Amino acid sequence: MATLSPILKQATPVIVDHALGSWIYATDGKKYLDFTTGIGVTSTGHCHPDVVAAAREQVGKIVHAQYTTVMHKPLLELTERLGDFLPSGLDSVFYATSGSEAVEASVRLARMATGRPNIISFHGGFHGRTVGAASLTTAGTKFRSGFSPLMSGVHIAPFPHAYRYGWDEETAVDFALKELDQLLASISSPADTAGFIIEPVLGDGGYIPTPAGFLQGLRERADKHGIVLIVDEVQAGVGRTGKFWGHNWAGITPDVIITAKGLASGFPISAIAASTELMGKAWPGSQGGTYGGNAVAAAAGVATLAVIERENMVQNALVRGDELRAGLDSLKGQFATIGDVRGRGLMQSVEFTAADGTPDAATALAVQQAAIPEELLLLTCGPHGNVIRIIPPLNVSSDEIQAGLTRFTQALKTAAV
Image 1 (cartoon, rainbow, N blue to C red):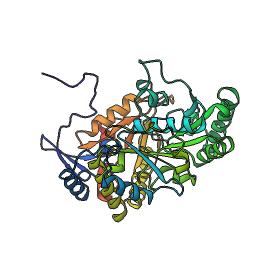
Image 2 (cartoon, rainbow, N blue to C red; image 1 turned 180 degrees about the vertical axis):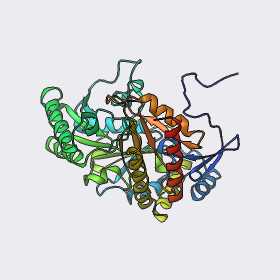
Image 3 (cartoon, one colour; image 1 turned 90 degrees about the vertical axis):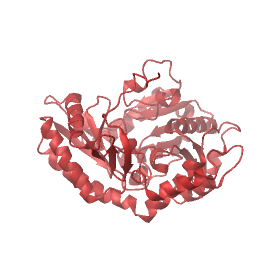
């Protein structure tokens, strides 16, 4: 008899029977409000009927059509449709299966296009668990420790986390940009630097929005030195922040966008987008993969983008996100251990801090666990595990937001914070 790896740790004891919209129905008969959405994956809610119908129809036609062998209609349709949402000029797309694969494809592209070896990532970023992606990740040591050596040519620069430093945002941005300039002057010469890679909102690193001024500063330095600016939109993209792409808040255009998670409402598909000119600098044969651009996942992606647009889910994420944020801000004033509330759209978080200002992981875990009997599902994150992230689907209702806040409040009281 086989069992799951003992290293896998489940955040809740819930065993799912079925799910719909914002709700998970467990085998024990309980109905849970799901504010985890598969870590931001079920963007249109669980089992949106249009996505289900598209996947069912495609399964009856062809499940796997390996797209470097034969092309299939869903991938062509997804590429055309995705082009409606991509920034002007980013008109070439490569598909993979996971976020990690797409991250590594973006690094490979940047190195090939520039002929330079180094990549600079930023403190707190999460880019995946494969060796290359983990080498770029500093959201926690659990993602990068114990299997060294990691990929060479990676350098880490400070992220402008104002709350951590105890500064205002402008001071944090100024500091982080100066430290990046110092890194370029002392460790990785611009002539050796192929790319910057950053999340527009840190994911596993604590749900920290990247200040607009910092993204603008990266764009300026990338332009000045011929460095490829890669924006990892795996978690923040596809409407999650109340704009279609998380970087839209800064008014910049990346050289490469990475997308996955919410792109197909739960079906595994990822992609990188770049200009045709930049993508054409990849070496022949360097892009591929057995399952990349799977036909069923692509069909689900087409349906997902159509549903998000037709049902105005990006705008809903913005409005519902404001409601959620207002409720969380109110709770911050009531519970002393809530040190910070932050996020954008439906990507919100609560950071727990002890009286001496140190991270309070025990309280975060206690609150997350106390929410389960309230039939509310949440996740923790952050390098210290002291942040609760709240990730409803993009079509969550106002009533569901208020129900979630009520249940979260009770969890806070139960955990005696």
